[in-house]
Image (cartoon, rainbow, N blue to C red; front, side, top):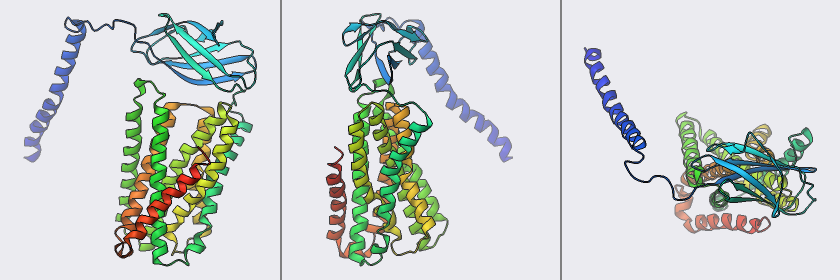
Length: 395
């Protein structure tokens, strides 16, 4: 009886759900067929925008990747290099559809370390300029290049994170006040990393055209990652592990959060090397090595009273540090601003969720925090100040 009476009710629910969508489609079709119901929907002047992507420099050749982010197709008419009109070839063709990609190739004998500005003119004489601050041969995806970026990721991610974990024996000698201070410092460290990642994402997102909706991309990355890690964390809590097991789970979640953040750092360094800013890349590497040693400390603080095996510690170190290798590969060889914004937002969401989990479980709900609230406050502030000071080496 329940099935017979439920079927019509279910069909009616689907009908009520679909009906507004069908009516909406009809309204849109009417609006389009009547050209805006008499309104002038055509813009007074052409709206044309171009998003530049990867610029590849080879001896005697410049290759420029671009995407049409206009509401309509555009036509490429001319190209100039440092204000001199220059012949070019374009693939797949001069007319680029909306959100379509094209590759411009210029046979041009560029000079090492010189700066260039390439201006692309559309059929409506609207100029779009791409800058090459320091001309140098672009690394390609060879085994040697991948190995170089792998080494950068090892230096930036794996080595400092594992070195920070070597403080574990010293942590076991600390009292409750010192442990509370360090846990609070870890929270401060993660909050600073998250804010820093959002700042970088907004900066890179500002260079994206409106079509990509950088703010929305950042929101999706942060909220999505937060909710995913929150679900994983709650799942771990319901499994019924021991107190030591829950502390290990927390350390693993911290490692994942830090690893996602290091993915963004690898992107920044790889991108710096890819555009020839080797000096900037070197400063970034040195700065991140100094800064990331504190991340290893943050991973082992929750398990300071336990005795994890060396294998477990090595795995945690790789989870926290190895993503920097992937980031260096993507940043050095792909050069996608939209992807960089998304990765940085994912890293921010991850560290914010981890900071919330640590603060909720191991700082503000503990008896030590009730007895020593100033210590918790000082720890958070100290964690943020440490990263601020070490960040001076990077900025």
